[in-house]
Image 1: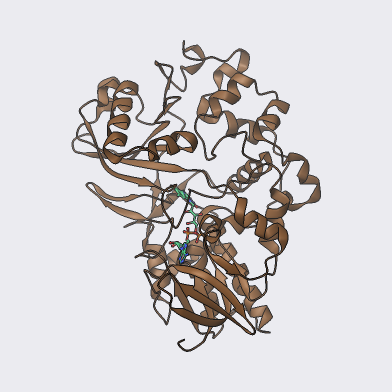
Image 2: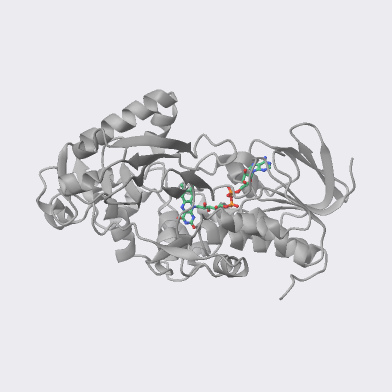
Length: 447
Ligand SMILES: Cc1cc2nc3c(=O)[nH]c(=O)nc-3n(C[C@H](O)[C@H](O)[C@H](O)COP(=O)(O)OP(=O)(O)OC[C@H]3O[C@@H](n4cnc5c(N)ncnc54)[C@H](O)[C@@H]3O)c2cc1C
């Protein structure tokens, strides 16, 4: 066994890096172990044919104070993200319309005032209209448990019809609406409402952010170092890597998604509800097909490039559009449709996606190629896009987010209290670091 660190951080995503920096600033000796060959986790910028493309996190909210602090400290610039659902094409059962024309579309199965709501906005619209959560911590109060029910039940209680629920179920941030807690969705809507609708990303790619954080660590992150087991040994915790190497430390911060954590041999006593959540918290599948279009096919059919369909490719979103050169777009597929595509070989996936795209947007036929397939569901270290609690899991999640788990602390976007996505990951990293420091009788630097 090598020398003993003060703290080992497992996972060099934003949560792990944030915890490591806070612990280092407080004077501790920190080693970050990362399974992949890069830092950043679900922040992953790719070199595409028209420039950088984001395979993972895209939007930086204007209220992401921790993240924006890192952007400023690293001297990075931001540019606005311009994709909006205000104008989009809707293709339902072969009938094509646009958001303003949707109410009159023959493909619209809804009746009454619901006909005017585009499928992509049914859930968001209903939640925004009647969100009982007004503060960032309201979701944790015992009274909030009444909304920890299947999403369709909550939508129906708001007067949303079964036909609208079925349409909305096709594509979203969830695996299925039935398997999703309404309280989790209300919490997401409350968090989103605190940020201006205008978002941005880092010029040169969001990956520059975790890279700049990793560069500030005294001891470099160790890539290609998947941790396979964590054991408490008296006053120490030992991390065992997949190749058998063992490294000891006084404390460990496990900043990995629960999908990965549940595959580790953890010989550490976690509180019962937390251990159950580690085993059971769902992560929806999400597969992205990065595309290049050699001509602006949306000018030929005169329809907005953003497309929502109730077919298997769900959503087409532009990334970088150009009228007189190649453009970058991506098909985003979540939930059951993503798992069905993930189960196919790569060649078959390409055929299905391009055939379906040609059916949904005939003008795109022959104009588009798939440049990259990124499956977050099949990514061994992510195991899905993000945590999306099932009905009945929110009280355990509140307990896990606030639990002091001793020498082994947990972090990650799934354990954020007030914010979500990248900012939530940073928030959870700060909390895990503060708990380690409190156990050592120290306070975080700058507090
Ligand atoms: C497609 C997509 C779009 C998104 N869009 C947005 C957005 O627009 N805005 C936003 O704010 N958020 C967005 N998110 C969410 C955001 O990316 C995450 O919330 C955040 O990056 C999670 O950070 P994390 O540190 O908690 O986890 P991760 O980034 O997953 O980091 C965990 C790290 O642990 C490593 N690891 C796992 N297992 C082990 C092991 N056994 N040993 C060692 N290392 C291990 C992983 O390789 C990874 O590097 C998006 C996510 C996806 C997938």
